[in-house]
Length: 519
Image (cartoon, rainbow, N blue to C red; front, side, top):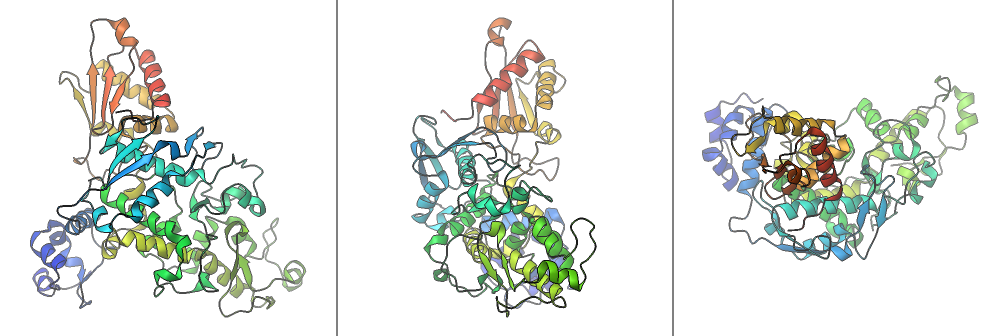
């Protein structure tokens, strides 16, 4: 942290509007003022690694609110249900076992069309507000329009469309790297990591950016510095990268969660945490392509002992200074090396390091486009306030439903009901009996999102669930009713069922078959 006293730090702040506002009004900046580094004369850089998390998060929200449009015109996005790719079947991350009914246009493609004609300033909403007014046309979502329920539903469908491109009913046991391109569309923005296709290593459920998206980059892009690239160098084929970045920025501002499980390296690049040691490079690379990393160790796969020179020549005698991107989708050239040059035994470790760096940067031009999209919605300096796992949680929420947090955020109506009431106890017992997939469906049913936002303290008042208990004089009539939900307000209307068994049956029926917004 800086040794500058708070008053001195204030006096040395730049005079830009943002800093002036923070100096006078932002309590979070006051909490963190001793951590400011005043060495940057243009604007002080924040030592975010040393700041308390609560202060960083409050400061992030204040910066976002100070950079939004005051009297913002809210765009209206109309999504045609007849053009939406409908997904059913397993809720596995990228469509394993899913049945995809691809109609005219994927939901994400519809979003791209609408973002292209919307000024980016009007997407910079205040924290917690919706970015656009959503309206659905078509049978499945007839009459669904407005906010915020339909907005969250649109985010869910957008995320689903980004992952349906990956599936033609993948048989994980038979998928191998050489045939991986056969189980997802080569033009998909996001693809499963090689560990999924190879069924080796960790993180088999995570996604990476497709390194084979067509572009107009110069040769050797995997190892070039992207800092000074212009957008025209990317070509129109990478438009979706930019719009995907805008979607991420909108999620940060609106706190609308995206159900997309990306690899750690993706999030690290978004927050600029890219300075890695060799050990960190090895860990990250092996965590998405263990097979390739293991091959670069030049060891016997059975015994684990390192090859000597004769064994190296036997197994790797024709190895040259090239490598392949994920799933063998394209060839990557290595810097300052001829791709026809043969790798010698003495230079094998140098070759290994070059390959790992190239693989970690195989999607560099695409990530550059995504970052441009994010920074059009969220200031770059604000992004640096977050650690990579905090950004992931901000955008994607918690992957599992924490019932303890949900209980803490729940209120009951009428007021005579509380946590000790029998009907309330049965309600929580039912949720506890659900599988993780069923819990996710419950959230989708009740709040039009499949994950909870992060809860950092017990006094978080940014959201709550309200359970309205519906009483009736006839138990038989009540037991025949189904629960309903108001997704805009996270209200669940729960009939006062006569038993745990009846409640579980009715609630499970509702969350399984009623995922569409109808009014």
